[in-house]
Image 1 (cartoon, rainbow, N blue to C red):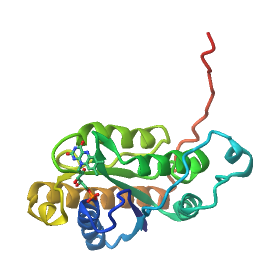
Image 2: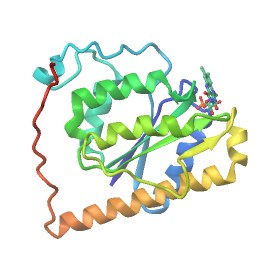
Image 3: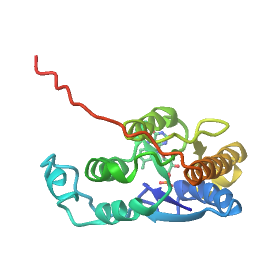
Length: 205
Ligand SMILES: Cc1cc2nc3c(=O)[nH]c(=O)nc-3n(C[C@H](O)[C@H](O)[C@H](O)COP(=O)(O)O)c2cc1C
């Protein structure tokens, strides 16, 4: 089983990475394969709402988002990590997730996911809410932990001292592994996920 861990910080080896590494450590202990993906620090086009992805099944921009969606199809779980910027997740991660979930929502359905935040001081829980909403609109089980899913620090060395934050990260990994094993066990025993129907009601007046 494989979990993709997306680092939504522009700083590849910053605090978000330190948090994700701890989730990764717990996953490895449970023999779950982690793959960490750094979404980079180059400009990333935002969703332009052209809806072409609904016709062609992919985003029209050929970049890391389509590559990620391809990987997501065979992954079993996800962790999305972000620094807090002005009390929200990084714009880069939101752009990445907007496009990935709009173009490739089916790749995420019924697969567990967790949000991880890194902040110097405040804004983590508001950011946590934002990321979790991608999961709950896509029928994804949300993986919880023993406290809010965040670490504190301006530098990775600070995160190393945030023992409670790191324990929360470690427990996300353990809880993710447990849930993945429960899902695999269910599948082996003939349990199939629901076939969610969908109807769109647009409010025009
Ligand atoms: C543009 C910008 C805005 C920030 N806003 C906040 C904030 O609202 N609250 C906070 O606690 N830290 C804020 N920070 C600090 C980062 O969230 C914090 O240092 C984080 O751990 C960095 O993670 P990284 O090393 O993975 O990029 C901000 C940093 C930047 C660059």
